[in-house]
Amino acid sequence: VLVTRISELSTRRTIMEASARSRRHGGWTLGGAALLWFLSYFGARGVIESVAFGSVWVYVAAWTPALPFALLLWLLIRGIREADELERRIHLEALVVAFPLTMLMLMVLGLLEIGIELDRENWGYRHVWAFLPVLYIVGIILARRRYGQ
Amino acid sequence: MNNRLKALRAERLWTQQDLADRAGVSRQTIHSIESGKYDPSLPLAFVLARIFDARIEEVFEP
Image 1 (spheres, helix red, strand yellow):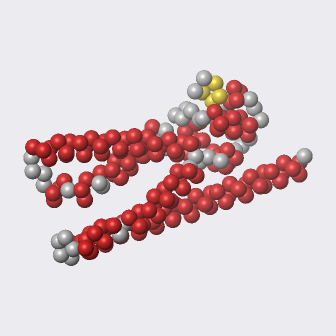
Image 2 (cartoon, one colour):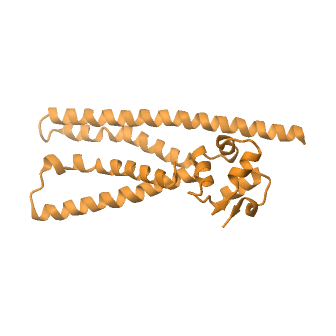
Image 3 (tube, helix red, strand yellow):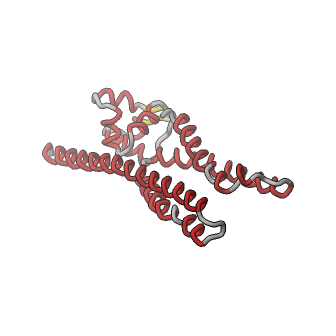
């Protein structure tokens, strides 16, 4: 019985260590994918600003960040599947903060757009999309505080 | 929901990380449960009770 118990504990520890290594490795991979996406986004902006307005390269460059983003998305989904239940809840609550607030902002901007000329330099799509990840991070911070982390 | 996780863990001289490793969750999750800020799901509550060889109602009480 003792040998079986030791064997069970040893196996469990090996699995846990492998899982912890996997989580650490996953964090680095996610960070790398996020950096790649970040660089591709600013690379695309640089290309778009340097080519002629309406050029075919604008379309190519605008879609280029979608490739590293697809990798990032896959890693995020994998990360959530591997996360424990509290971590999943924290991300769910963060989305519950970020998604409706972004929707509200888009709705208000949409209504304003009917009545006034919105400044594209401040309220163009390239600025508005960034509110979602920022609010998502705010939501994560709020949820972590709620659960005492 | 009140729980005796901290006391049971202290009896065994386990750290939060030790318990987290055994339960397959993060140390932060154990901390949140112990401090009463997070109520675990029923499957996790059963896992935690089994780790201490106790019945679920001996670990958690409403």
